[in-house]
Every structure is written in C-alpha cells, then in structure tokens.
Amino acid sequence: MTIVDRTSDTELTLTNDANLQPAVAAEFGALADLLGSASDAQWDTPSLCEGWRVREVIAHLTMAARYSEEEFMAELRHCDFDFNRLSNQVASRDAELPTGELVANLRADVMHHWTPPGGGYHGALNHVVIHGLDVTVPLGVPRRSPDETIRVVLNDLTEGGGHTHFGISIQGRSFQSTDLDWSYGSGPALHGAAEDLALRLCGRTVPDGRLQGTPL
Image (cartoon, rainbow, N blue to C red; front, side):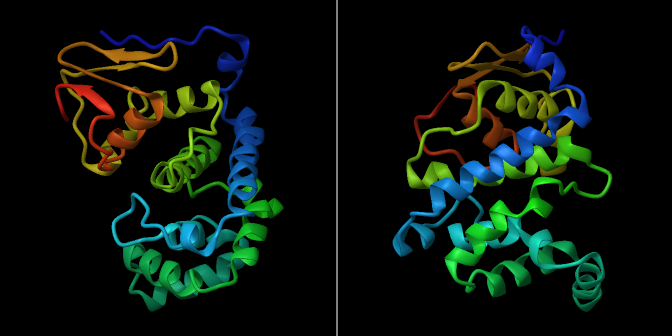
C-alpha cells in the first residue's frame, strides 16, 4: 500500500506539470540569493556530489544559461555522447567562471523556464531542488524549499519512480518525514527530515545521524 499526503489546494495544483514553473523559478532564485553573498571558502566547500565543490554543482546546474542547444550538442559529440563525461568536463571548466556570473546564471530567465528533455517541469524541479540540497546541506543551511515543493519532489522520487535513475530500490520499504506531513509505502521504515529522505532516494550519502530506521 502506498500512502501519499496531498492535503492542500496548493499541493494538488502542483501535481500539474504546467503549474510547476513558478516553483522552479523560485528555487533558482533562492539559490541565487543564498550564494550572492557567499565567500570564496563557501564556494569551495565540497558538495554532496562526489568530487564537486559548490562551484561545480552550480556550474552544472546552470549549463542551459550559457550553452545553446547547438553548442550543447557540439559538446556532447566531443564527449562521444557520454553525458556523465560531458557533465564533469563542463562543471570542471565552468566552475572557474567568476562567482558573480554563476549567480547571474541562476537568475537567468532561461533557467527559470528550462526543462530537461522529456522531463517537463517535474524534471526541472527535481533537478534544482536536489542540486540545491547538494549545496545547502554541506553549507549548514536549512532547507529553503517550501513544504509543498519538497513534497512534490518526494512524490516524484517514490511513486513517480525517480529513485530508479539513481540505482535505489525502495520495494518493501516505507518512508516517514519528520518535518512535514508526508509518508510513503509499507515495510521497514526510514525516518528523517524531508530533505534528507529526498537526498537518500537520489543515492546521496547523508551526514550521520540525520536518518533513523532501517538503512536503504
């Protein structure tokens, strides 16, 4: 049995992909507001993405603000159509851009309306929320996503099947958020804050002590 809580009109509205664009824009804007005053040391903080600092994560997250579709495809061909290789190459190179430029990329209108191929605004929201957490958790910053936004991401990662993209199996498992009214599934439970459950469902290593129950 699957248990998913969607109790407010706002949450029901956010299940419609077309209505998610403002939430996507808000996530990019919140990251820009946070990092606009960040120190060099904070930009150099290791993120939850192995081998990437905050700089690399933001450079990766904002690729669409700097590369047209033609330029992106040229880069992809150069990497023999290996997207992981492309991601690492571009993140490494563009992380050296001035931080002010990367913050401006976060504020760019193109990012606020960007969607991944075939993923719609659900895909865009998951992308910016999770990579945002890759940055904010190591920086010790509380979750900036509203409850209704992180609930959409949790639903996408569980009932929506998003966890499979990260090699995570949730069959026979349940999850319970400790900071908002959300739960999923049945079986051995994993408890924690919504952001930590989302990160674990994406294969991230969550800092010790932030999740309780049977590990994935």
